[in-house]
Length: 445
Image (cartoon, rainbow, N blue to C red; front, side, top):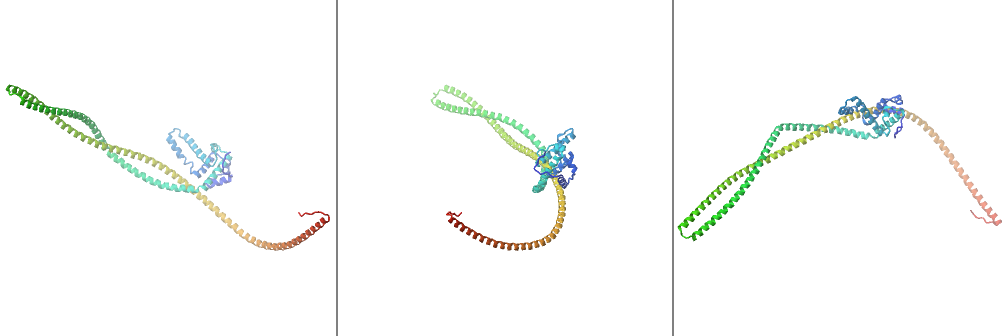
C-alpha cells in the first residue's frame, strides 16, 4: 500500500477538488481508473504546483531528439516522453511523502492506490497554496525584475553586437595594412639578421685592425726611440771621431743607407696608418649605419609588439563576443522559460479568480442563509427573553423560599446544638457520679 502523511479523502472530496481546478472527473473514472485518465489527473495536480503540463514536455523531448540525430525518432520519442512524465510525477509523489510510487501506478493503476495517491497530491497542493502564497508573490516580483533585467541585457547585447560589428569592419579595413606591415616586418627582420651578421664580421675586422694599429704604434714608438738613440750615438761618435775623410765618408754612406731604409720603413708605416685610418672611418660609417638599422629594428619591434597587442585585444574581443553570444542564448532560454511560467501563472491566476468568484457566490448564499437564520434567532431570542424573565421571577421566589428555609433550619440547628451540649453535660455528670460510686477512674478522651 502507498504511504503518506496526508489523510485519505473521499471520492466526493477528490471530485470537488479537481473540479475546482477546472478538471472535472466522474465517480466511475475514479472507481475504475485507466492509464490515460490517471496520467491526465496526475498532470493536473502537477500543473497546480510546478506549472508543467504535457505540452511543455514536448519541446525538450524534440530538442533532445534533434541533438541526438536518431533514426527511429517515433520509437525514442514515445519512450523519452514516458520517461519524463514518470520522472516529474515521481518527484511530485516524493514531495507528497509517497516513497513507493512506481511506473505501475501510472500505467496499470489500481483503485485503492489511485485514491490514496490522489488524496496525497490534492492535500499537498492545498498545503502549498495555503502556506506558500508569499513565496509565489516573491516569485512573481522576481519574474518582473527578471523581465526588466532581460530588456536591459538585450539592449546591452545589441550595443555590444554593434560595437563588435564596428570592430570587425575596422579589422577588415586594417587587414591589408596589417598584411603589408607583416611582409615589411619579415623583410626588415631578414635584413636585420643579415646586417647583424655583417656587423659581427665588421666588428671582428675592426678589432683586428685596432690590434694591428696598436702594434704598429708601438713599433713606431720603438723606432723613434731607436732613431733618437742613434742620433745621440751619432752625436757622441762625431765628437769622438778622428778627422779621417775616408772613415767619415764610409760612416756617412753607411748612415745614409740606414737612414734611407728607416725612411722607407717610416713611409711604409705611414701608408699603413693612412690605410688603417681609412678603414677605421669606413668602420665608423658602418657602425653608424648599423646603429640606424638597430634603431629601425627597435621601431619595428615596437610596431610588432603593438600589432601583437592589437591581435591579442582582437582575440579577447572575439572571446568576449563568444561569451556574450552564449550569455544571450542563456538569456533567451531564461526569457522563454519565464514567459512560459508567466503564462502558466496567468492561467493559474484566472482559475484562482474563477474559483474565488465561485467561493464569493457561495459565501453570498451562505450569508443570505445566515441572515435568515439570524432573523429567526432574533424571534426565538425574544421568546427566550420572555421565558428567561419568567424563570428569573420563579428563581427569585425560590431564593426567598430558600432564605426562609435557611433561617428556619439555622434556628432548629441552634436548638439542637443547645440540647446536644446540655445532654452531653448531663452525661458527663452521670458518668462521673457512677465512677465515684464504683471506685473507677475515668479519663477524658
